[in-house]
Length: 173
Image 1 (cartoon, rainbow, N blue to C red):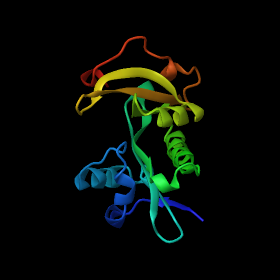
Image 2 (image 1 turned 90 degrees about the vertical axis):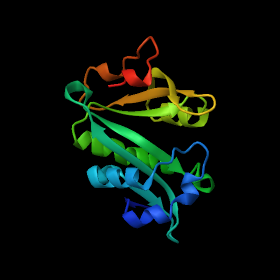
Image 3 (image 1 turned 180 degrees about the vertical axis):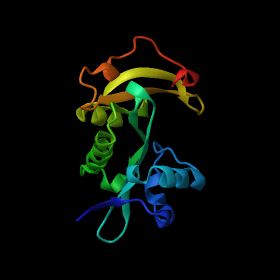
Image 4 (image 1 turned 135 degrees about the vertical axis):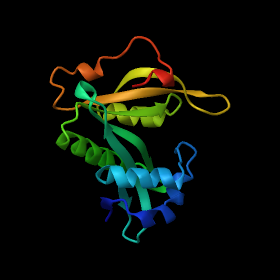
């Protein structure tokens, strides 16, 4: 049976199997530790009965006023554990934490080419809020969708009214 639990420092030595996926954004150890120190409740792992990390989610709460929101920084599941509903469960944890923090919405960025992830997020109730031009660096750079899901505090669903024009990374609040 899969265990969903808070991320621990020692997990950084065991999650390479998850991070080696080409669509997974990887970061330096200090970045992971910063999230663990500042937003530990938003950093969760799915662990197999044998102790293998199957996937994880990392996020934070940020913004002010009606822009106060939960943000998914990274969500990934190892290829051999996909299609088991783990991503959905991890997203539900992050959304629940964001509800408890009285956030207005949850947002995330996804490569426009990652159709599998985009489809999954849409099934979870997310909409494409805007396109962010050249958000992901590479050869060539790639655009991202800023996807959002309104939470219960956003009664009028203002946070999910899509923008009609793309933005640049430097224009993101």
